[in-house]
Amino acid sequence: MNRTFVTPFDREDIAALAHTLDDVTDFIHAAADAMLLYKIDCPSQRAKELADIIVQAAVEVEKAIPQLRHRAELEKILPRCVEINRLENVADDVFHSAQAELFDDTTDMAQVIKWREIYEYMESATDRCEDVSNVLEGVALKYA
Image (cartoon, rainbow, N blue to C red):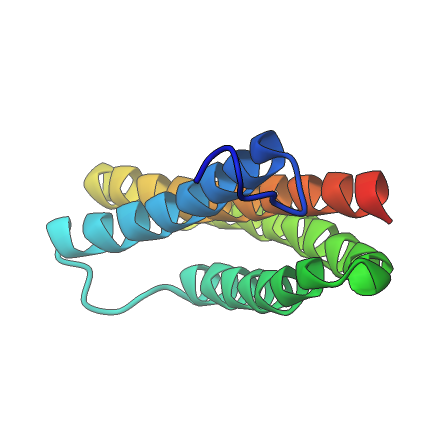
């Protein structure tokens, strides 16, 4: 099979895409696990904002992936990559605001530690979405 099946993309590109997608889900799972571990009953407003950004980035990825099937549609991936990168920048801003609010508004250091870890996982998920975007952009530019 390895010798007869020809993929439309290099194996390295396929592996990179699979790896970066897996990283996204790993960080989402880590954030959810931390919320369960720390018995977080109600997510903070900043956590909700980060979750919304993650969903928006995931939707862009979901829309971009099928466009890999047809070389004529590869150029349509690029605006999605730009949007994912924009969303990651927004997530950075939300993350920094969330951290500042934690240290300004919270006197319970246990809560600070818990939320800081959760925010870091969530922001890392958006970073990994940007990594997916970079792989998609590379494939689109290579094969368009």
